[in-house]
Image (cartoon, rainbow over all chains, first blue to last red):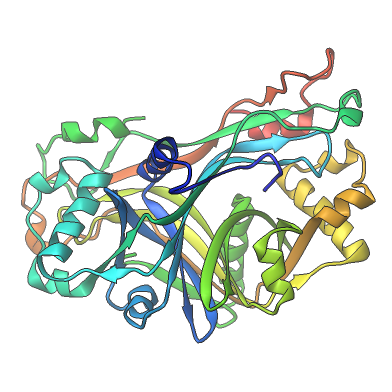
Length: 210
Length: 210
C-alpha cells in the first residue's frame, strides 16, 4: 500500500517472522480465499483457523472453493486486520495501517477423522472450549461440509503501522496529519431470542465481553 | 458460509439490491483483489472507493495487481464487513455474521486526467473534504500510482445476520446460543508526532471520532 510497508517472508526471515505470521492469523477468523476457475479468479470470504503450521479453511460442499481445490486449483488466501487510516499531508502518502498475511499453495480436502477433527479445531479456535459443550457433528453434517488444509509454506506478512511518512517539503504546509486508529471490537454476547430459561452465558465467552 | 446466507444478484434483483451493494461498499475502504498470474491466483488487500457504478482500486505501479490488469487478467474483488460470531447449539450451525460484496470483471487502468481525478476520489471518499486541504499530486507521484476502474456489473452481495439457526432437536440441549456482535470502530484521531504546533484537527474528521 505504501513504500513504508514491511514485507516478511518465510522461511528466509526465521522464527520472529513466523511469530508475526501466526499472531496475525490467530487474531482473525474470516479470510479471503481465491481460486481459479476457467482461467478466472474467484475470491470469497470464509471462516478459517490456524492449526500449527497450516490453516484450515471452512466450506460447504456446494461451494466453488472446495470444488476448485478438488479440481486442482492453487489457492491464495489473505487475512487482513485494519488498524486505521493514515491521514498524510499529501494524497500520495495517505494510506491505511493494517496487518496482513497472504498464503499461496495447493489445499488438501480433509476426509474421515481428519475432517471431523478439523471442524472441531475451527470451532474451538473461534471459541476455546466450545466443543466440550456441544454435540459432535452428525454424519449428514460432515457430508455437507468441507475443510481445506493449506500449509504455511509460501507465506508472507505485510504490516504498516504508525504515523504518515510525509515528504520533507510538505512538513510545514499547515495541514493536519495523523492517524485514525480502528479496531474490530466485540460487544457483550447476546443470547438467542429462543434460548431456554436458566442457561447462563458460559465463562469461555468472557474473552469476547465488550 | 451457512445455508442461511442470502444472496442478492444484480441486475435481477433491482434497485434495493443495488442499494445493499452500494451500502456495503461505502462502509469500507480496504478490499481484497484477486488476479491470475501463470494460472495461479493472487489475492491482496488494497484501498478502494466506490465511484458511482464502479469501484476504483488503488495500487502502486510496481504492484502485481496493476501489471496483471495490463496483461489482461480478469479480477475478483471482495469487500467484507465482520458483524459478529454466531454461537450455535451445534458446530455445524456456528458461523459468522457478515456483509460482503464480490465483483467480477476486467479492470481498466486509468490514465491522464481520469487517473488524477480517481486518486482524488479515493482520498475524498475515505475522508470527505480532504483534497481541498492538501496539494495536488505531482507528476512523479502520478507516475508511481495506478488506479484500476472496475464496473459494478457482475456483482453480488451476501449478508448473514441475526441469531443462530439451530436444528429443532438441539433447542432444548441446555447449551448457550447467541451472537457476539463485532464492529470496526474508530478511536479519536491522533496527531502525527511531527505535526506543527497550532494545527487543529479538522472538522471533516469528526465522523471518525470514537
